[in-house]
Length: 296
Image (tube, rainbow, N blue to C red; front, side, top):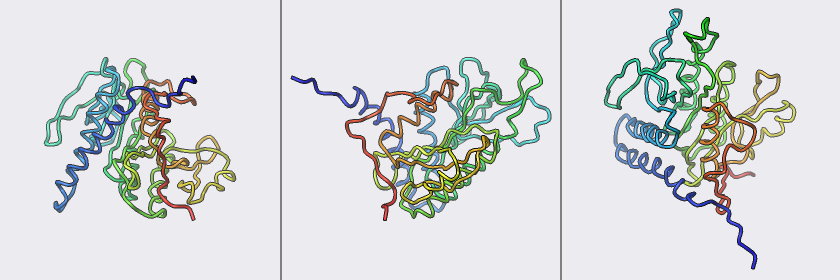
């Protein structure tokens, strides 16, 4: 008798339950604030839930907090920016100071111990994508060459920036493409390492997430993909002489969530390769996939 091939490992369903918990907490907060004139609380809940989940998921060598990046560079002219999520070296980093607020405690982390910055927004829209991109662009002054290895004043490798959106509501392809173009503008800032964006769910399927990232190649070849069926941005220039498109050529899939978070882990460790980062969490038994827009 032939042995049945298993298409998902044990624990996959429990793994996805973690994502469902994030979305459940967010949905409850969203429902509770439906009548509020200014709806910010559900976004704060989603942000806090993601921080808590990352703190549980990531190895203990990484700390996760809301807070500030502090440089000893006396020439730094920027303001004290508050970052949604800072991932830092928890084994080596001191906390320079803390601040308590209604949205929780915030930590000040020395720049050389910062390994990642995550900008979190509740819903992917042209406005939110523009805000997230503008915020991550404020990392640019933190890049440079320190005069001393003993007293670093800039971000050091490994470091990665990324975005997370809790959802995308029903929209048009034109509007969605504008969001992708807004995010792709971060590639204009050549110095900022950017992994991509995760959209936890779409209006079409709660189980499917979008792993949005850059697709690079020759501009003439990429222009052939500038078609609504591929749900990508318009072409833009990359620093290596190639061009890029931003989005997800495979659409929204169930496995985009584990693919994104294990890629993030490898970037944080400085060990990311062109191979699949991990097979943990991947479900080939029910590999759901959807596109946001019906092709005509």
